[in-house]
Length: 86
Image 1 (cartoon, rainbow, N blue to C red):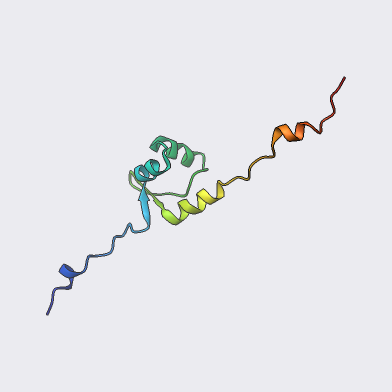
Image 2 (image 1 turned 60 degrees about the vertical axis):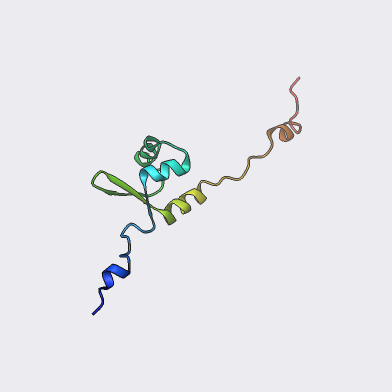
């Protein structure tokens, strides 16, 4: 009988997750910034296991998509339509 554990790597339980420090590095932000966002409940959803913090990659992508803003109207062009008070 062949030993299957040696030939096939076991799946990672954390597949699809990213650590807090790795996410901070990818977003070019500090870990502290991610912690502040979590405290304000304005960051991506996270999972805490003791002191370890992980983010589901799909949830981070969804959160990033929600952060997308449409460009504001050009302030200079809209100010031309204002009447000057004299």
